[in-house]
Length: 257
Image (tube, rainbow, N blue to C red; front, side, top):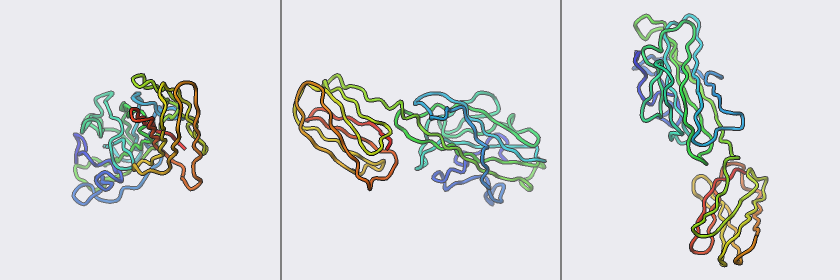
């Protein structure tokens, strides 16, 4: 029906228009079965690096079909856009500032299968896991919506957490390193500072809720280390570490447990 590209929001993402695809009564109808392996990438096995560019390929396989379409989207668990798409050729186009990619008219004609490759610019440092969602249309090219089949697929892409390094704040002369990352239950904060006072380490979940806190006094000058043993009840996942040193310094970093 949409030979020039699918309308935005039809990539089958669960938190984006309630997993809407073109398998609705006003469009192609039917169901949208999930297919494994129809989205591939050249992202390394250890994960994406922030702001780096990768190739994402969307491929549909359906014997006997002769016109194909797709819509893809990179999102987090809340339906937010994670990075953005750009095109590599005239077979694909971009919608909504890179949140969606879909076919063009030139990219629909094929036999038994079709594939589209686009570039994906990864999100900023500490964004966490990204899921590539896609919905596909395998059509029989009879000029109507009868006989067409809608499919969905998804691909989980993890962030390369080795890129999460801790950088000194030169303005306040507070230099630190937080490790290990990932952690097995113990976190250490090495730091140097030209001020004495109090330091607070807050462990926060992704919803902004405080999970655990460590407060300690520290002296000015020299190398110092603080340790935080995580409570056994804390589940594995992604968290923020918030560090406040005195009244002047405030640091934020994502850590994987």
